[in-house]
Amino acid sequence: MEHKPKILIVRLSAIGDVIHSLPVLHALRRKFPNAYIGWLVEDKAAEILLGNSLIDQVYVLPKKKWKSQGFTLKTCKEFLEFIKTIKNEKFDIAIDLQELFKSGILTYLSGAKRRIAHAKTREFADIFINEKLKAHNIFDPNKPVIERYLETAQHLEAPTDEIKFSLPPINQQIKDTVSGLLKNLDKDKPIVILAPATTWPSKHWLESYWSELLDRLAPDNNVIFIGSSQDIALINKITSEANTDNYLSLAGKTSLLELIELFNRTDIVIAPDTGPAYIANATDKPAIIMISGSTSYKRTFPYGEKHTAIAANLPCQPCHKKRCLKKDYHMECMKKVTPDKIFRIFNEKLTLIGKNIVL
Image (tube, rainbow, N blue to C red; front, side):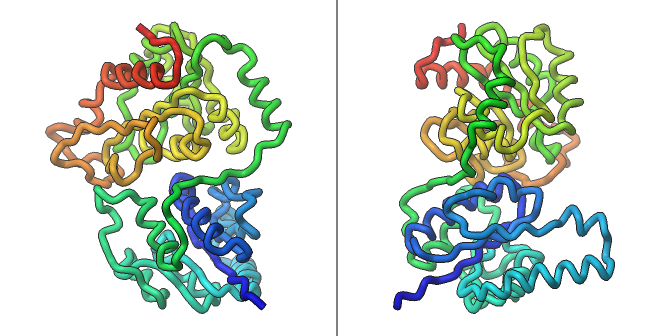
């Protein structure tokens, strides 16, 4: 009888990084069509995996709950029960794609016989690994992070010639909800999404630039802002500095699944290096213009020929710092990517997708 391997993928967070890991899932499923594949993920990023037809079981680590409970006996008991559930599955292989101490120890605690990751990882996480891939700089600015993740699949002789992302199915209720949100749009105009917020200040494009871009896009496009409820203040500041009120803000009004469906109906997305841009990339529908600052536009970028990542290419880039440390030319990497440059690329995208050119 053919042995059906049991494989556990460990990538806990964040949403963008989990999406970057999805091509590994696709490769493994091609190599092992009958395998039992589980995925260990933290609660904040779990929704992007739940319902995925390529995954047999999503193990959701309730980080938010345990953090609020604190280091208590109850938390310890729940953690041990959680680990026991995973261990009882008797995984043959566990792949640590995050390669941090927390993911490494969870990989070890899974009980998997084969534990795969790169050598010389951050936080000494490779002490938990017994099959170590060749070490190289995780922040190599010229190596796409997706290709780094796929090296684990190649180690298992899985085919990696296709870069594919699989997302949860969208039901009719979700589609109807999104239709309701978009009911007042002009159906003859392109839908353009602006996603200005990110968790790193060094990735933020200038608010005044977003305002100027909004003014230029609004007359001939359906412009939609997206983000969480925490991003509403930022979006309000951007729109208050613009000279138009011809836009729709859906910040804090969509679930992750509704956001996926929204991207399915979108023509162009403009965003910095942030999770929503990669969700859009995974839908394979809109063209994406990504504004890169502190991170490498060659390392993390939207996959596909119709997308563009733009960077200033200053000597200090990429710095991989959450905050710009340059006092003499603070955030110069973002200042040099002007609204004119983004608007020119935007017009090129409209031409490629067969929409009217905005003059």
